[in-house]
Amino acid sequence: MLADIHRQLDSIVLGKSEVTRLAITCLLAQGHLLIEDAPGLGKSTLAVALAKTFGLQYTKVPCTNDLLPSDLLGLSIWDATAQSMRFTPGPIFSQVLLADELNRAPSKTQSALLEAMEERQVSVDGVSRPLPSPFFVIATQNPMDQVGVSPLPESQMDRFMMRLTIGFPSAKAELDLLRSGDRRNEAINAKPVLTGDALSKLQQAIEKIHIAEPILIYAQQLLAASRTGSTRPLSPRAGLALLRAARAFALQSGRDHVLPDDIQAVWAAVVSHRLGASHDSLQKAGQLAQAILVSVGAP
Image (cartoon, rainbow, N blue to C red; front, side, top):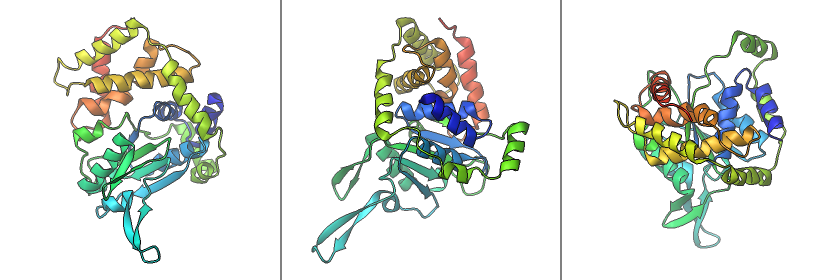
């Protein structure tokens, strides 16, 4: 089943199997995903392909500088027929939400989204409303050197389990793309490989993936190493996200236990946006993450 998922995503997002596997890891681990890249490199295509492959409801919200929290969460309006206020849900009530160009949205709207990500519910007019399950946010942001963007605060960046970049395709993948054309239609028309119930069972199966004591010690040593240099220190919450992502990565490899390789495979995606300042490039953040990884011996 997971092999079929990998195969379908790799046929849509060409030449980026490592990126698609990490994105699947984030979904299975019940995290949220931040993708930072220049326009035109397939961020939206990846989001649509993930939603369609897993058979999930998908909504895209373009984040502009005039987007209000109510545009995202919904609002209560007067129903003259019923003579009462009626809540109209916003686009956030979706199983997969693509918040496109999140760093162009006003800070209040960013905060409203990130609060919902953490609580998995929204509060409007004093009433709390649960979000769908599963609830997976994919936010994209443009590089900081582009016009009209502002960095997310570090505390908000921490709400994302992973930050990825798709990057330019290889020469072979780009030639295949030029031959076949835009992959967006392939993503939109992708057939579900599994149902929402099957996804829920996979997410629950992650809890049963064993982590031995030496692996726990290794993860703690990596966290501790981040607190001795010039980087922003990693919190225990980052460590919990690291272990959950490693479990999801191990599940995709068909194992019932985590290896050091799993920790290393997800390490940069989980911690790079937590180590440096929010305006740091992925390249610089990745270098910080790699330096810590090299400094700690694996069991």
